[in-house]
Image (cartoon, rainbow, N blue to C red; front, side, top):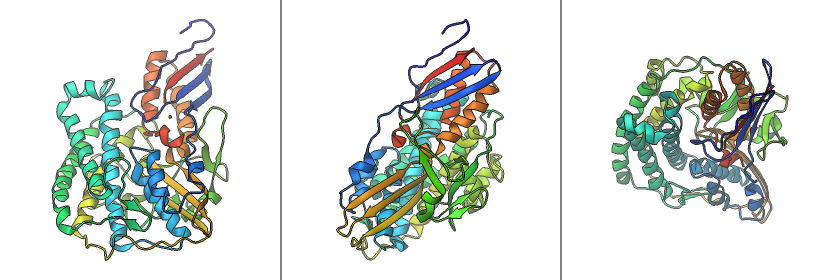
Length: 431
């Protein structure tokens, strides 16, 4: 750190996010002139890896993009390939996919709430230090994550990079009696989730709102595995029109592409968007928990996203129990998906937001082109804009305090930098 015309502060790496990156802030007098969320992770080339592979391979290949939300990649991939082949998977198989997705939401949100984000609100550098004074809370979070993992292991074959998902359905589907032990685990998880909402509602949230347009799926029930894309200003479009409304562009400081609307507007996807556009589709229990926590018709404070995630854990546990109670085994574990030439699109709700896949298939069923747009790269422009305003209101803080607050602000979005290409060196220049 220097103390003359310019001050520079560098943090070696930001803990408690997925991946590696940096934040650069340049301040001149009272003005924040530049904010860059630098993602310097090398490109991972998954879209190139998929070219020339069989139409049946994307669920297994794309699941390797992320160890935290592999089901999201599998579900978007399956939808896109099946759309290209003219096949719709619904009924009991569709409900099993939704049940598997509930497991991923529970384990991913529990990880973020308890191990990554809650220490910020309670003044601890990490979950280990948090556990010394709040052991019962951390153990509750670990139980929740374990419950989500158990659901993923049961339906997916394993919690990380599941292997039981295939285009057309599953390799194996369970008998109803096999789900009974899971139901007991999920009832306990639902009680832990309700306690999590109550716990998080007691945190102190900075007064900070954003004005970005929300973008999330919308369906006849709270969106997870399917729906139409809906914006906060009334735009509605199917997955097949995603690239007509959203464009990606390269920026010099990031190996991840930035997404924006084709009309130039930035947007935000993720829990705040899902909740604000679909609150009325929460289960009665989750809606009651949201009301008790003080969440209104919409939530625009990124710091309160931890509270929305907690409500979504209640919903996911509640929904999983509903799906198990109504489960009737499908006639077969998967429907045939014969290849044909065409293009298919799939959008689902990863825990961090919209995840879009497109595949162009040749007549031999081989993939000619693939496109994957993860939620973190969609949110980058909104994160940078929020940080610019957040920093401008806190320039009175010294560099160490400002760095801590910026790290917390970025963790609001639970960025999965691995998915988008990785996080945090922070450089602040003041002159």
